[in-house]
Image 1 (cartoon, rainbow, N blue to C red):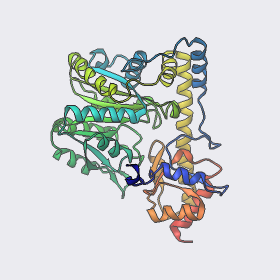
Image 2 (image 1 turned 180 degrees about the horizontal axis):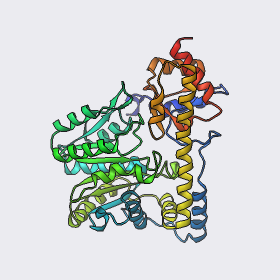
Image 3 (image 1 turned 90 degrees about the horizontal axis):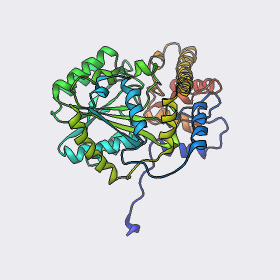
Length: 399
């Protein structure tokens, strides 16, 4: 039976990582996969995480299964981190949070829930979006549609096109929104634009589904959750997929959460029962270690402050590389404006490079970029920014 199976194409991003590993050039640069790297090009384990793990190791008494919905205190702390202590959504009891295997697990659980309970609903994704978004949703049996998002001319958000598409989407559909640090473009709506988007979504009767993978990587915890708080209006419904991979550096631990916000506490209990069925028939219950780390840090004031300081350091390093890259490119190509790189937020930015130019960078300079021109800004450091800008300038000028 297996002989008839055709080989699947390599993943558009992870496949490049494999090619990078096999590249013998000592000066190669990898700007593909979305992991944070420090100035030495390493993905560090946070000191706050190490401290939390030491506490867990000392006090560990069992490795028994977690409940279907995960670690209860982790879920409560997740709600408080994203909505803020004392928010109406929390105090009313109309939100139910479930620990999931990473943010991707949250997306899949939500997609299964949507398909099982609203089989005719489609999920609308931005153009462009994270390449795995439509794949995850389609794998769950959900139809995927697209709305315009990025304006290549301004390297910003196409707010008019986005609002026009929302106004025509069928009521009862789901719209997937990047709550901050849009992947892959790095272009986020302004606070005023988020209000317009929320107004349009609720006026049209759509269910907002916020993918929140980069809290703290834009401008800080408070400003980065402004979009979520705009949508969290009294009595409304929404889905939120959150991840601790980036802001806690827990990539391999697969720590995420799905929060379902309903109209009241009674509905929250009903919906929770259905989400638990979805989880039980998928992975049964989530792994414990990563969630225990997050719980330990968020529940301890000293560890939480240490984590916040480390998150600030990561964010400021990325934003510093945005400024440095912009300056370096201005020196090499003064007639070409790269200031949008400095304005954008999060790990990623669209460079405007074509697929052919990206191929040339890889083939001639061993610089690895996703073919749509997206770069992981966290992969830039003071040691490689000069050669990187030299190579991009060479490709853009043909010299």
